[in-house]
Image (cartoon, rainbow, N blue to C red; front, top):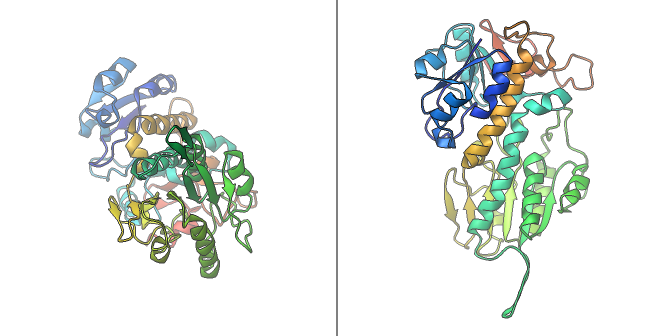
Length: 387
């Protein structure tokens, strides 16, 4: 069995498989073919791959492997019919990728569709591994741009009070952001539409911001449910009120398959103090802050700094690649049956939980998007997007 690792497009510094995964992949029966230079941006040299047992090849040869691991969707050019392509295709926002794979009869395995509540899926959950790093880096970016120290310091010249940090949203990324800010010495406040998140927030050192009328707005798959405009406004008003005197505000709200909700409107930014930093973790999908400019760091008229850095995991390419590679290595090893990769409708990771189970949600399937030129029948939510 051959597994190809193509070089990612310009702007993506991560790589799909790293040298430390070679041992496990080899034991599972894979011959790994890595495009020359694929890991350089993440500080993995071709020599490292060769020493670990991988073969360095051209892009053409990497794309002709029966199985391909990538981070960004690599396109279908040069990929043969029947190939298993595993990547983060974000099919709800990029239905054209699904259509291209269907037309080319490529089996698309979109790793961002992992059924995260299945315990067996947790070691394959690329969303969690990358979000953890993103939450960590978001706080570091805030600390780098804020014009003051973070921890309390007692000096001969006087005592410096700790910085105030507000984290909006407390999923995987948010909890890591809270923990990181707390470790830096900040006083941390955090919000979430899931009331059950209060205990998690407090466990990592945050102070929960409660909103009147709050319920547990979480769907069965573990993602936040869409909220009514009225309640969104109430949450925005309450949390932005707490953030009015904050030094760093990190926004993390991301709704699966939908544009990022606005949690920091321009009117709120206008009330923030000069020198405050807003780090928008969702600049790539529209942004949580109304004033965010994707890929840029800008300063408003009232002196608020807004960080719209995209692909936060990619700023930690070495570690992010290692975690992603661990996820994909475990995933592909789980598919091997009698020395071949088997794409089975009996695998809940691939097709989602069976109807009637505790994890069945709206007919939504797992990572298997399309095969043999057809969308998998479990992808009922996606069927309305791909025409």
